[in-house]
Amino acid sequence: MTAKTSGDGRRAAPTRDEIVERLQRAPAPLQPDDLHLSPVPPGARVTLAAVLVPLVSRDGEVNVLLTQRSSHLRDHPNQISFPGGRVEGGDENRIDTALREATEETGLARERVEVLGMLPVHEMSSGFRISPVVGWIEPPFDLTPDPFEVAATFEVPLEHFLDPVNHLRRYYYFNGRHRHYLAMPFEGRYIWGATAGMLYSLYRQLRAS
Image (tube, rainbow, N blue to C red; front, side, top):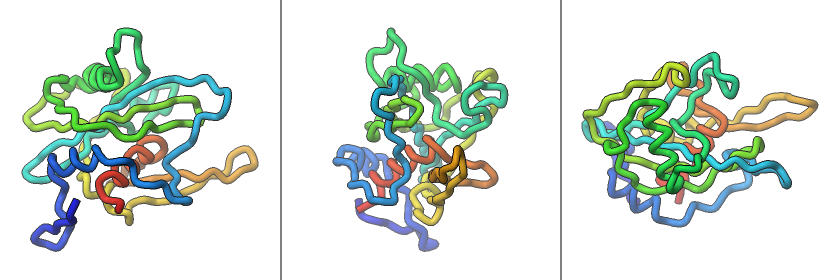
């Protein structure tokens, strides 16, 4: 994808067709300092899941739609995430899982989503294997978040995640070890963990050479 710039010198957002073309390519090779993967430990119980990575077209720009999880949830309260969840028996495939979960969590009608492609499976040390499904959404559309699961929905310009300046390497100390992770904060919202990892995969597909 050829880099383009806007009138003020910023790189222009990729178009829908450019995103489709990039998603069809093999994933860019991982580098030694990439922190977006936490492989499932050998012998761990595997949980299959899928998320929707919703790209919203707005006035020539592209935004990423994200959710903030409710504070009372047992797993990852208050964290920023993509709509998604575990694969269920009635799901036809991972795309069906992602679209079903997006509708259940945000009220986004699945017919408003055009599936553009998939990102590489994202593994977590907790045993989750997550299939990220990239979807394109043209306004207008309605959202009616499930208050039990979702405290808020919001959009972030895709260009924020495609600028490596915003890819922050962080660490915390736990059980005698320094554990490293990736974060991509935006306007007071701390986007990290699996969500940041999948956004980094999107960056690799769309911008990495």
